[in-house]
Length: 219
Picture (cartoon, rainbow, N blue to C red):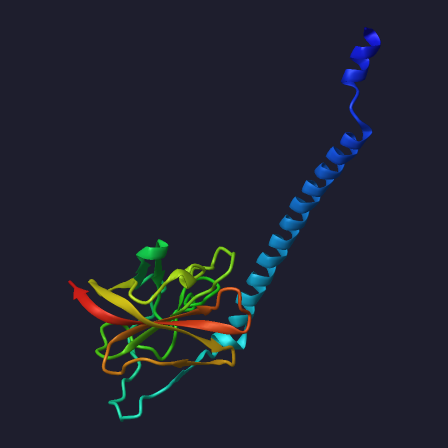
């Protein structure tokens, strides 16, 4: 009787080998997955940083692509007063739960490594038929304020709070541009627009441009 009980409790060596192999396989999968994910995040951060690195940030050259017919030239917003280093307005995008302040484009804090960047040469929202241009980091770093922009679609709403007014925009066009040091902006020059620029999600060779048109202004 004792011999029979012992035989019943003994586990087949084949079963033991199978269980051991399964545990090793599962453990290896998770180790590999974590390594791949870590490398992916590093690569994405590198991709974002190279887009905004060095001279490119300081000399961001926005190449405006004109429509065929002649349009009245819209001059960049100019200031003669003291440079402010606090937020002068806010960008809000409800779909991705983003609210972020922006600064005077002349401020030393107007930098993608610290904030979203108001591109020099663009127009603030109160300029009729002007174009307000903002660039921002994507990636996994603390300053990747535009990381979720890729979730936006035509028809989504974007808001700018500036000078005690709330400007409501609707996205009308989304397209990519190669990283050549220049960004072509395709927009309707009869409309007041907002342009958002960031690295393309999972693509190290292009940046994505989001064009939004003004549809309403609230006091």
